[in-house]
Amino acid sequence: MRTRWPVLLALLLAACHEPSNHDRGGDFAVLTRADPGYQQALPGMPIEFPRDHGMHPGFRIEWWYLTANLEDDQGRPFGVQWTLFRTATSPPETAAGGNPWQDPQVFMAHFAISTPTDHMAFQRYARGGEHEGMAQAGVQAQPFMAWLDDWTLQSAGPEWLPLGLRARQDGYAVELELNADRPPVLQGTGGFSQKHPKGGGSHYYSQPFLSASGTLIIDHLPIRVKGKAWLDREWSSQFLQPDQEGWDWFALHLDSGEKLMVFQLRPVGNQGKPYVHAALMDPEGNKQSLDSSGIRLQIIERQRVAGRELPLHWRLELTGIDRVLDVQALHPEQWLDVDFPYWEGVVRARGDGPGSSGQGYLEMTGYPRAQ
Image (tube, rainbow, N blue to C red; front, side, top):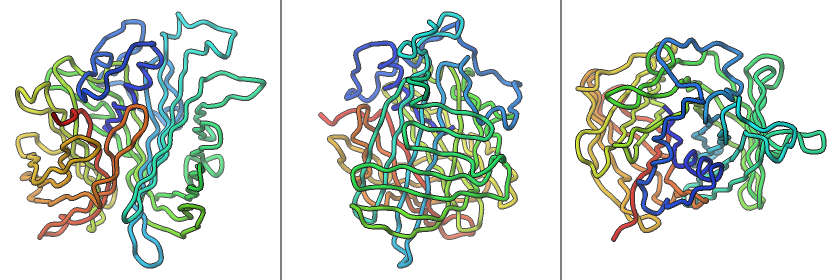
């Protein structure tokens, strides 16, 4: 589930012209509203390629989300996040036509770089539709291309892979080539990812086995890097239920060659148990969903970041696969200080047994400002 909801909230609020209160950390009411004019994510709806690499305008919102764990020639750790979000301002049958400035598709992109000691994040917005013969932002399925201005993720040829990632702003840039020898992984059950005990969710697939190589530009200085990347695709029309307020999401590249995704959706006011899910993907790409009764996320340490007490040190206990992972942030200051801010950054996992160590990304949302 690459839970990208803080940013999705920003798009929805911008699209609906509703006042925001993101500093509260838990006011996601706009994401809980059902609208029968949009398609709903339901179990049993098949995911097909290359069609589903592209847009789903019948659904309210979706994203193309890439994170990369990289190292330079000296072994220093770096991270890259690149995301394109789409939201619809109205269902397709009610959308106004003709005027590109009234196009119902609104796009927002995020681009962030983590260094061993620092973190930089940027954002851009655009409306769909052609302006003077060109679209500022959009997505096409084949050959695949997702873009907002000159921030692009696109296939190098007619096939889905390899991909090229390009983004540049204010003396910082990323140019990566991405490839994999494994097909995409359908998350949840056949690509339907449940998000609440009573149902509801999204359509979701991942490409977690990407290799990455290329160049980062940090304060105008180029750095050659290589490593691993993880691409997530998700679309839906109602992500949260009224009793949910935030989430913690882990995507880990394990030293065993396995990939591990773990997430929890926290209830409002922590009244009750979180909804948890975990999936382990073996080196061949086979996925094993774990029983929720054997998933435990324990906070070890919190640190103050951007006025919030954030859990940056975790213990993940997965009894179904006999794994215990100690997960810590590379450093605390991986906060995206964008319009609707959230924490997402590089983490390291350590454990005693095989498949208990590695690296990856953690995202955390819904934490209010400390009193």
